[in-house]
Amino acid sequence: MNKIEISDTLLFKFFLGETTNDETDRIAAWLDANPEEHQKYMDEVHEKFIISIMTEPDSVPEADTNLWYRITHSRTIRQTVGIAASLLLVIGGCYLFFTSQLTQMVGNPTTIESPAGQHVRLTLHDGTTVELNSKSKISYPALFIGKERRVRLEGEAMFEVAHDASQPFIVETYACDVEVLGTHFNVIADKNTQEFSTALFEGSVAVRNKINDEEILMEPNTIVNLKNGHLHLSELESRDNYLWTDGIISFSGDNFEQIVDKLRRYFDVDIEIQRTRLPDVRYKRLKIRTSEGLDHILRILQRSSDFTYEYNDLENKIIIK
Image (cartoon, rainbow, N blue to C red; front, top):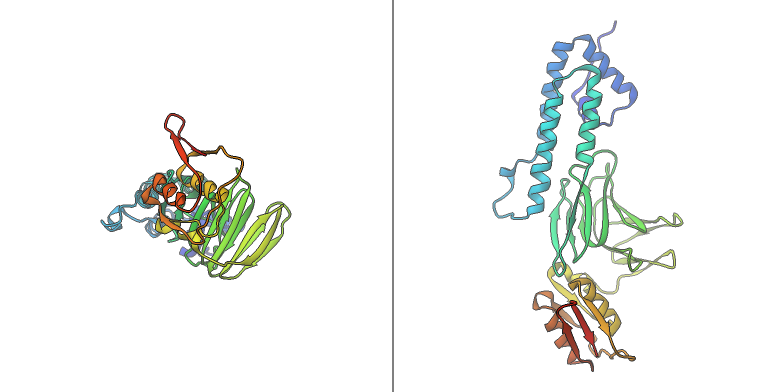
């Protein structure tokens, strides 16, 4: 019988659950040929594999107080590593069980939702940074395993994706999927209001419509909107609407109804308009820091619009008159 040679690269691929049936059979035959020696070697290679995916808490700078970064890069991975290490005591065909358990553990998603009136910044395992706008939610695995890096978004988020041509990054939403290799872009996906848009600042992305499979390849400084079930591409005239990552809310060019919608979404407050005619807004460009609070923003708007308001504390409602 010919001697079976197994490379470290193939074992790494096996630990990730990416080997073909033929490759898995080769590894099983290699283990059966010399269980004691090959088991020991496989354990050594697995230690290298674990080190390659593990980030210890001590490696995170003290200045980085991002709770989500520590959760993603410490607790989840270390739990996965502990389970994987205990399963390494078995040999031969039982490694298939280990691989499936490892894949399941790292595939279980972590979900983060940003509080009303705030935005949350997090760093994924691959180095991609995500900023979640108010009342937005993202789900992602502790480790990206397989041929793609997939996250699911509800709401609005700004992404700076770490480049990896061999593993495209996909933002899944209720309406469309946004696929990128490495870029800077913003996605809005609000199922309640049936709003979807993608604004691209750097790089290139492909937006695929789940309804009819139409696809648009975007270039920098363009925006795609979903209207009546179809994607529409246009030039991005201004980046004012994406200043929320800097704590700034922009109402440039918005009518009163659009302003109210933004305030509802950002501050998670019910706003009721008790008048037949909407107030005119005379501001052409208006940017306000959200840290000033909702009452301050409404008082600024009153300077250019004819309306009064009152706040119902029991119902958390603002009434526009």
